Length: 435
Image 1 (spheres, rainbow, N blue to C red):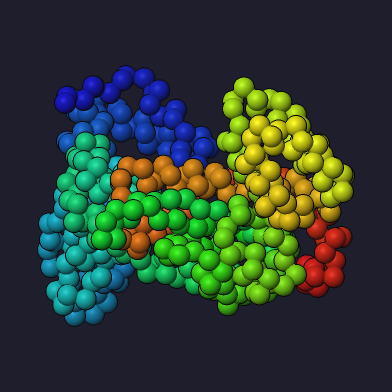
Image 2 (cartoon, rainbow, N blue to C red):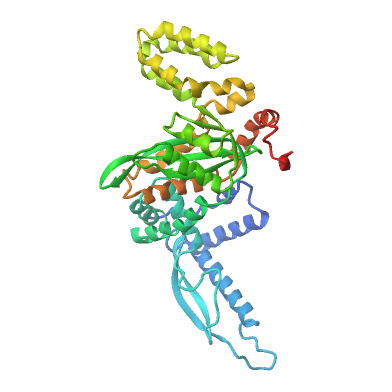
């Protein structure tokens, strides 16, 4: 498709840089000069033969020439001190590299006579600049398949990136993922949130597999995804004991609260690994399950009866409100009684604490946004060939979270009131180096 000619004004240079700040005077002057040259030469600014591609070629070749000058210790045509040179320039090799901005660019890489020159900006045998790998991984984490990523590069950059090349780039992340899953963790966490997402995995036949993620909140209020685990067919105390033992082996000696959604066998495993940790079930999930058993026409009335239960001042008041709610609705919806009585012991722990602590530990909402990103990433794929492929996709999603860091800042600010309450309530377990 024919590109539109460059506009005669300087509106194009008023765009902001990636970091959000305005262009510097030098950058603005350079951009205006490029636009002026494009107009004079009748060139498009972008496109296969546009000025941006020519400029990219010039920058790369100039940088390579400067690297050669530094390597030899003298500029082109400059003689050595004694008039002779053990090593000299020896022409150039033509190669094509793929860039993320302007697609394939043909450049001339200088050579030296004894072959000792090792360029840095475009390394030997390198055919793609580093940003291409970053773009591939980012697109993969956002849910594009390998074929769609290749099509994206052809459409946007005019570059050919095969499925095999994309797959090789993604495979290189395996070592990084293994290092991430074994990295050391903090000694004490104020809270750990555990929740699951179901992913289709082909293991003989395609079936749903649960993948669990754990988010830890440290004593400074910072959150961190501690790990991702694929659940075996039979989930239970033995499975959770292995997961929590892994976290302990990575340095986690104590957790004040572990918040989950009634995961089978998890409370028993927590008692073995962290005896003082308090297991709290997600209040939001319990409320949702209550409504699931009832007709939609009764939701508003049931909701009003539930408010006194989860806002009670203590467990005794909550139990009285619960019984009143069950008296009103259990005869019509018998399953509600079994739901609440079965979940009661893991529902009540948060009622013993200040409202600031209650607010941050009463639900697994802290991990829901992560699950939403996970679902968006896996939806495009339909299913994965094995557990490792699914874990790789989920890890790349974690890797691309909060690129600006603003989410972490907001999160920490929300947790500050609760951390003050934690410091008082758990003073005997608060590390001395955090006082």
